[in-house]
Image 1 (cartoon, helix red, strand yellow):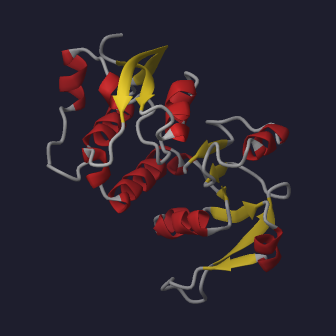
Image 2: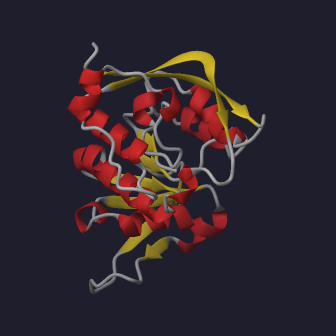
Length: 230
């Protein structure tokens, strides 16, 4: 319906090959992934310069936050749209030429602002529904996510899991910065020993398909058994 649909399209990047991973992602998400991959660092699953929606929807979601430079207004709008039960849709045709240049306003938004918005949205939409979960990545990104969670959600983390033997050999992650005594410790497991659901903190499209193969081999379903966060 007009009140729930935000429609976009595929894009052609200029110069060709700039932000290759991002362009591949934005052009190849399935309809389900337009919802399930809303938490990654790539931002809105339908790219903002391609958005079409009814004025009614725009007014209902609540306009853009014009807080000035450094406000990720597209992400804020997109999250609010999803909160209200919106359905993002994408035409597969690449109808927009999307130019990349270093000085774009996008780059003025600080990473920490976006990180916090993403973590909060993940906690609100996914983690609040789960009793416990495993963070897939015992490295820097996985630990950063753990430390960014609310205390309630930290306590839901039953393990970290990984493919890297060096990390698995440590067997535990100790949250050194914690105010709690004793300091919380979380087991580190091989991913085959771990149980879901999972939050995947490994960047998509960076492992030559190995991550995707591992998830498929475990017969895990995106949006039920796991969500991508990176």
